[in-house]
Structure formats: structure tokens, C-alpha cells
Length: 197
Image (cartoon, rainbow, N blue to C red; front, side, top):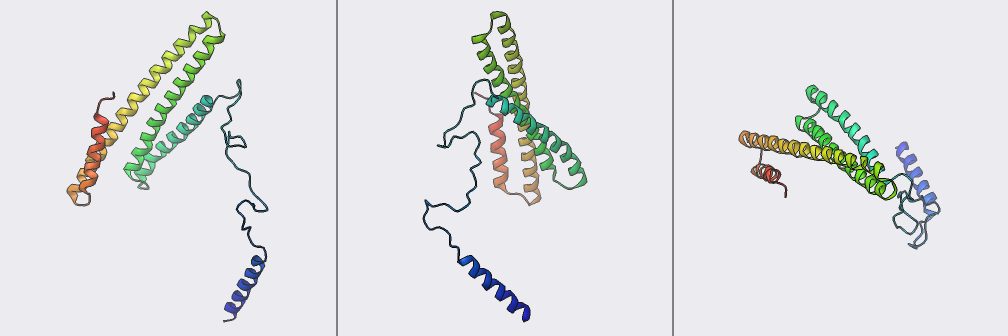
């Protein structure tokens, strides 16, 4: 009983302390301490700030970010197989980690292609004809790498959709699946099997 009375007294005392400093009622009036907005690349009026020429390009930043994401995804995929064998995660999760690596590789190849095209366009305006002959070779190599990565991504997604359909059909046959899940998996597989226009 004594604990309850002590606790009740402390609650009432803290309530009176906090009640003396009311919050502002005017929406235009801010609190005494307002943290700064943490929105990068924005001016004070909310418009997007474009980096000046010669500074780090946004395509370079995207490529660097994608490379770090890909490195992290590869580590996760490698640990995913080990965790599956230990019984910590499901096989579906391990397969999803591997599929994420393939998707990030395709994104990275596309970003590198865009970066190579941008550098080739910028190079044709400022450099001599001897130096610009090397630029189309870099663009052609980047296009080939992007095409190969896209094909690998499409193939991996198709295989994943097929495995998912087989799983859903097995679950339905065992009585723990739903027909809607099988239909959804069939629809996803049919969409991936359609030729790209």
C-alpha cells in the first residue's frame, strides 16, 4: 500500500510539473527547440539542388550506392544459404536473397550504362576525335553487360516464379495452401513468360 501511495504522489507531482509548461497552440508558432530538416539536396524553398558541374555526379553517386548495396546483398545471400542449412530461415528467404543479388546486378549494369552514355555525350562535346573513339567502345561494353545482366535477371525471376508455383501447388495438394495463391503464382509466371515488347 505504501508503494502505491508513493507512486501516486510521484505521478501527480510530475503531472503538475509538466502542466506548467503548455505546448504552443498556434500552428505557426514552433517549439523552443526544432531540429533541422534532414532532407539532402534541397534548398530552403524545397526545390531540388543540382550539383555544380565538375562535382560528384548523381549517376556516380547512384553507381557507388548500388555497388555498396550489391556487396551487402552478396554477403546476405551467402549467409542465407548457411542460415537455411542451420534451420534459422526458410528456403524461400534464402532464394529471395539470391534473387535480390541478381536484381541489384542488373540495376548496377543499367546505371553504369547510363553513366557511360552520359560521359560519352560529355566527351564528344569537349574532346578531340581520337579520344572519342574510345568512348563508344566503353558504351558498347556497358550495353553488352547491361543486356547480359537483364537476361540473367529475367531468367532468375522466371525460375523463382516457377519454384513458387510448384510450392503453392504442393501446399494446396497437402491441404495447407489456397487456390488463390496458386492462381496468383500462375498469373505471375504467365506475366514473366510473355515476350518483352
